[in-house]
Length: 122
Image 1 (cartoon, rainbow, N blue to C red):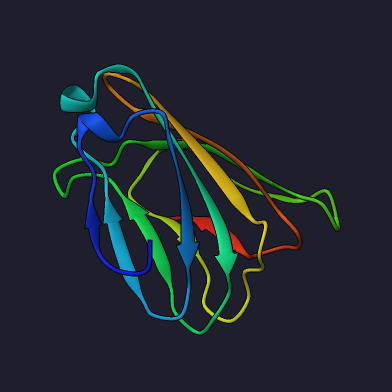
Image 2 (cartoon, rainbow, N blue to C red):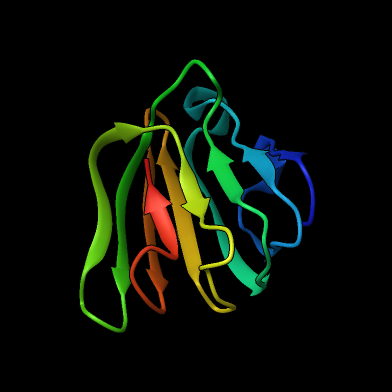
């Protein structure tokens, strides 16, 4: 993915590679439309100066989860719903990844980054 993308229920089970040369958003379907069991994985394969965001439908703050860090053991986390999963411009590195799973009400995020602040939940 290298530009704006709106996901659908049919995107469940897919792995998306991210090109960070430009800033763009990937919009998730509403949690109800995605349904329980919907899941997708996102892997940064080309770092750059753009900010890549995975965001829920604008009416929802439904991302909950944790991104672990290899270098320091620190992590980015959200214990209640937030509205952005962000690969940070000029910081993220190839191999930084996140997987998202839906239960029909919320999206649960788990991922890993090479170093602090490559991926944030906000």
